[in-house]
Image 1 (cartoon, rainbow, N blue to C red):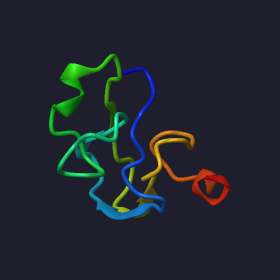
Image 2: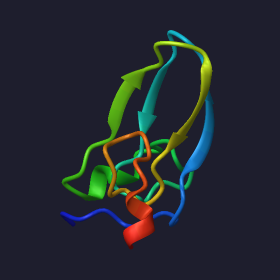
Image 3: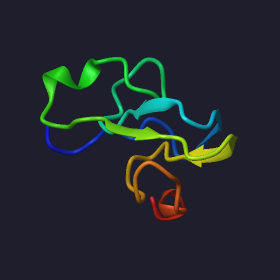
Image 4: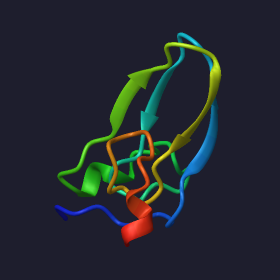
Length: 78
């Protein structure tokens, strides 16, 4: 598998905590969307690991087509 599965056609609202590390699911197979649960191990796609710079609500991509991991509205053209 070289293309991700569309997990949903709209973003996930996520409350991030400053200094916390997160692993955003890039393959679309995770059962704990938008976060990685290791399901990518059957693919060539790896999660995007990032640390929140500040405590705030963000919108994480659900369609897997945007600038990862933050939604950029790409789902509007699916």
